[in-house]
Length: 262
Image (cartoon, rainbow, N blue to C red; front, side):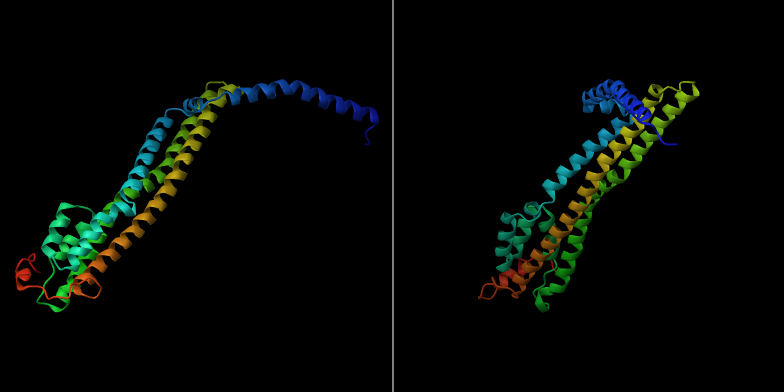
């Protein structure tokens, strides 16, 4: 049936009237939402938000620790690498070993055991055994670092599950209101709001934690590869395969002063 112009005008007036009536409610709701602070949302998320906040603090602390301790300048300080290159280039293994013991770190802790494998009576001063020791020690040091980095992955996995726990708690609150005979929207809004905020909080924690995990995992792998490369260069200096070895022969007294050979 075709609408007449009068009916069209009537429908248009009804729409205008409805919009005029709903506008104050919409504006009021917008003002209420705009006045909500982060603390208000935190409270509406329920008790589970305390656990999410605790995990967030732990994630930030781990991220700061990894950024400080696992950077390249910390793993290979120039004031450690340069003296070691000089001492090993001169084949002064006793002084190099004592220097490693006085300056603990991933690089020196991987080099010190290798120095004890040196043997001047074997071909290339027993370089093969020294290389194997360095590889094992570098792997051990990298494993220790990855134990800490893996905690970031733990928080990234746990955060959505904690948020889901808050979602379940919020839905239980809503259904409890329905069971009690409270079917008004305001009675259900509290539980639904708690569920959504808890879910959002869990995701807001999981996304940065996952990014930090992959970032620092790559940083540790790359920097430890550089540490291994630096130590291999030191062995080349020691055996004479790289520059820096003195031209004069090593005196016999130096042989007897070396750390115990394998």
